[in-house]
Length: 153
Image 1 (cartoon, rainbow, N blue to C red):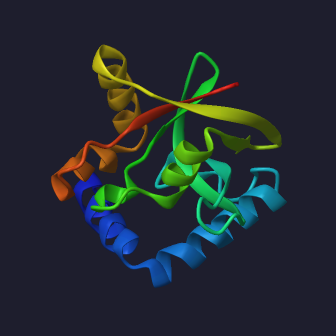
Image 2 (image 1 turned 180 degrees about the horizontal axis):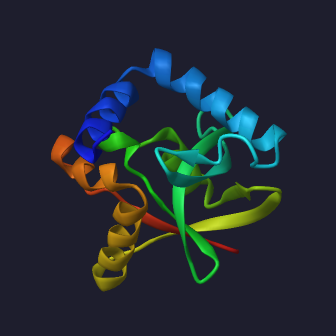
Image 3 (image 1 turned 90 degrees about the vertical axis):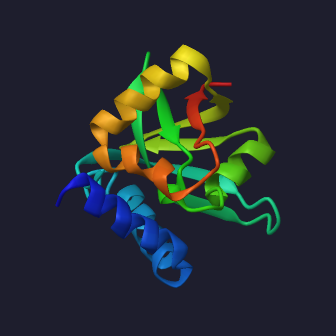
């Protein structure tokens, strides 16, 4: 499937919470239960599971998120497939100041750092190389899509 079609599909799915939330929960469960052996990719891009605490509910959340590595730290895109609203995992992570990234069997506490300038541009290119559909997400929204490095606190 071509990148533009994947972007349109995932953008429509992100706006349909009845479909996207149960799918994300099942994906995260399967990934963590298998130690990352099952469901380690999404349309070819590597996936980690980000564990956060709901900023309003206080309940634990686990969300599969695409990533690339920069100097051993995961880099994620808070795109929500280009939907107008930011992804809940990003709002939870930002407000809490941290969470846990699960990559395979590795669990690490992380703190978010939003990139800017040259660093953001370089990481944006790497994310789009790993997941070409991401290049189309800015077409669906006016908000700037945060490129976030998940650093060890």
